[in-house]
Image 1 (cartoon, helix red, strand yellow):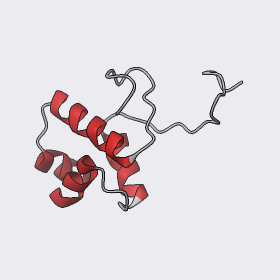
Image 2 (cartoon, helix red, strand yellow; image 1 turned 180 degrees about the vertical axis):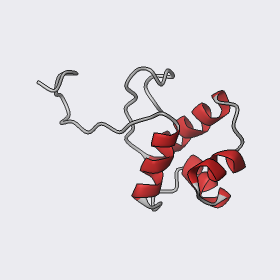
Image 3 (cartoon, helix red, strand yellow; image 1 turned 45 degrees about the vertical axis):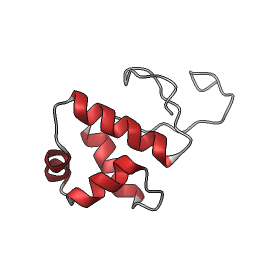
Length: 86
């Protein structure tokens, strides 16, 4: 499960289910239905359902596009690195 409930702070995601839970939580906070998010993202409703369920085989670019649409970004850094990348 995500280590922090606030999207303003970094959330460590190690499993697809954790990402799905975060997407579902933020979508609900934004007052969007799954079908709304699918329409905005230009994808099918099934994709959003699968994303929120944590399906591990989803197309990466589509996932990144949905996250971007929701105002999220993916940052990759080495484990144990400082928050400032030093």
